[in-house]
Length: 102
Image 1 (cartoon, rainbow, N blue to C red):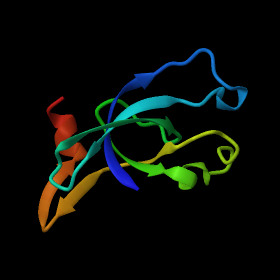
Image 2 (image 1 turned 180 degrees about the horizontal axis):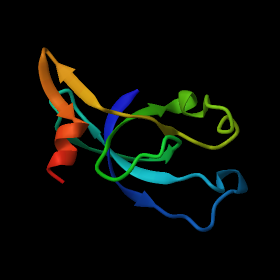
Image 3 (image 1 turned 45 degrees about the horizontal axis):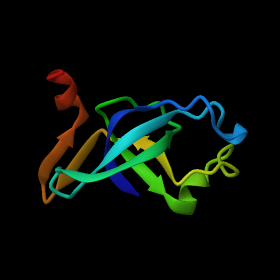
Image 4 (image 1 turned 45 degrees about the vertical axis):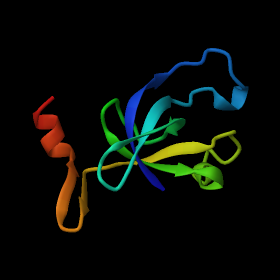
């Protein structure tokens, strides 16, 4: 899994039938210092995350492990919304702190 920030939404009105009803979000990956990396990816959202939230992204075959998603052509799936991240006893991210300033 990788940590990413939800940067936006992706809307596709013409797609394969197996993708009908799948919410797609644009995510930007985050490094161990909390800095945004230049890498973006479109990920299916199965947990109800929103723009600005830090999320856990599962990639590759693991992105299709969840029931109802195993037969869909997914390379990345958002599988969790992050509450906090700490590195070396230092707070890197807190959803509560972020929400207070937005």
